Image 1 (cartoon, rainbow over the protein chains, first blue to last red):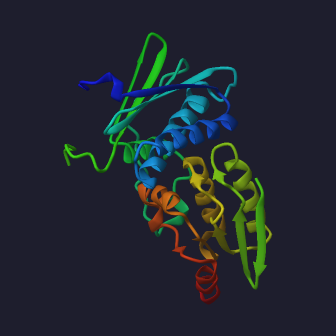
Image 2 (image 1 turned 90 degrees about the horizontal axis):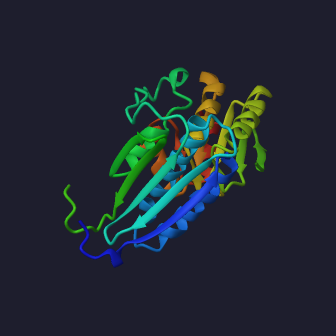
Image 3 (image 1 turned 45 degrees about the vertical axis):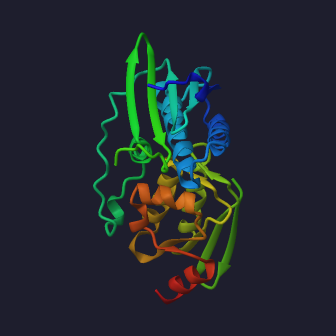
Length: 152
Length: 113
């Protein structure tokens, strides 16, 4: 538990459930995390993970229908960033997803989609998803690579 | 999205002006690529110099383009940024696509294949 709440900076974003808005969220996340001494690749991992989560909310929770809110909260801690993406649409069945077992040499059977959750799980250090009271919440955490007490 | 196309011999170079190939443009991107492939372009260099972000939808559209070419040709990638490359590595797509440092190297590889 953080001993000093003053070390945590939080920002809330809200966007309408339109795919054309998702880039704005991504750019905002990129800008915010860029000021927190993460590496370029770490920043990118956070951005792509938030984008994938927001895409999921737009396309699956809200079934592509505009007019619904997707909420994003970023909390910058000294050693990590926590991202919470929430919606009030249809819940996911969970984070478990069969990652395509692909043979790089077998072009015909390459999956053309379905990599979003796998990207989030690979890019972020912790990912939790749950639904309660009609609200679906995905929380993801990325630790800075120079975190001294990080358990490897 | 704006995509610059250049034909060099039998190779088509496609350079999305980007900067994002994401869910909002992936369908358009895939449609344009499939049109070029259906016009007979079987060797394609995808130059990502102007692209700084690809999500799973964009990646899926690139994979779809590779599948559309089939075994008679190839789609290779060049000028990929470190951050975009990290997505290919996270998804192991760096094992599927040939990725070159420069357009020149990509053209050379496709011209001799």
